[in-house]
Length: 279
Image (cartoon, rainbow, N blue to C red; front, side, top):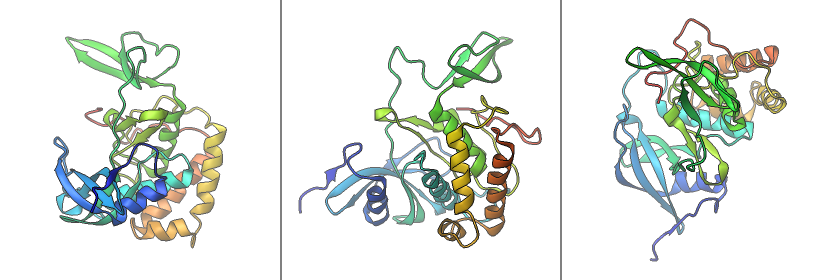
């Protein structure tokens, strides 16, 4: 049998990648260190195609007292479902499947592309009190020896879409290390295990647009999401296998609130607004 052919970027559609991830043979190649839960780096092969992926078995999840229902893996897949419904494709193809260590989340591995030497990247610390052109202010941060710097993120439409997605899925952990620029200019967000809580848990580095009017494309996406979240809709059926009824109802409420205000979310003041550590 010939060796599977490695997939070059962009060769397969996301739907074809979902099939590969869901039906392919998983081979564990190593472990991603530094994660609080088990994260395994794997190859996945199916019908002559092969790709790299991340496999997060449920058996390797650490219990979270404030997320007693469901699993991190299920919420990761639910986040992918919402991302796909928006049409923005902000989360790599993700499936729930059995693997070498039982059921878990399997997600396409994204090889992040570092910014060119003359490009500033997506996040920065600046010594000025204002963010400067092309940047949005997040918060002041201590940088040692009694000094502070202003944390900023790029005024980038890709990040703005992620900010809207995070507000919808109630992402409790949007860190800088979860932003993966890919070849061709595409930007992905990863690590969505702490999402969809019925209470407000939004913590993110992408507060730069807080309180500003939502762009027209976001309003259109939210209108479409509201329709797809009507009781009995196919999306709701899929989500019902991944998160609780109370979490689905809270999801509807968050979409409704964003549509009603027409504004980007602001910190609630009842929950730390920025994740720690932020990277």
